[in-house]
Length: 212
Image (tube, rainbow, N blue to C red):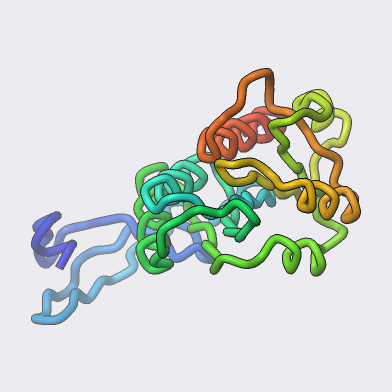
C-alpha cells in the first residue's frame, strides 16, 4: 500500500531496500498484486554497515516523549533502545509495534542500513541484576557526578549503554542499587535536563567522541 498508493510506484520502477543484514540493494518493481508487491533485487549499492555498539536505556515517560526518544536515538545511531520502569515512572501505556515503526522510518530517513531493537519495559532492579559486565554503563544523574565527557574520554570505546532516569529523577534506593552494580554517576552539565533531552545529549556526546 505504501509503495503503490503513497510512492505511486508501478511495474518497472526502482527503489532502494535493506534488511539489516545484506546491505542496501537497488530493486525494481516486478509485479503489483492486490495484496502485495513483488520486487526483484537488481544490484547491491552499499555493503552492510553497523555503528558503535551503543544502547540507550531510558525510563518510561509519556508516550509522545518516548516516541521522540526512539526516533532521535535511531537518527543518532543507537543500536538498541531499552525501556525501564523506575520508582518514579509516570507514563502512558506503550505500543511496541508503534515504536518499532518509528524506528524503521527514522532509519530510512537517515540512510541507516539497520534498525535498532526496541525492548519491552523491564524493572530497573531486574535490568541491573542481569547486567552484562562486559558492557560499560553510563549512569546519568542530575544530582551530580563526574563530568561525563572527560570520564568517557578516559574510558575509551567498546560496548556501552547509557542509562537515563525518569522525570522525577532517581530515588535514593535506585542510586544505591546503581552504586552496588558498579555504576559511577556521571553529569551532563549544570542544567537539569528532561529525560528525552538527557538521553539524546548523552548519545551525541559518545558518538562525537567516537567520530560518529
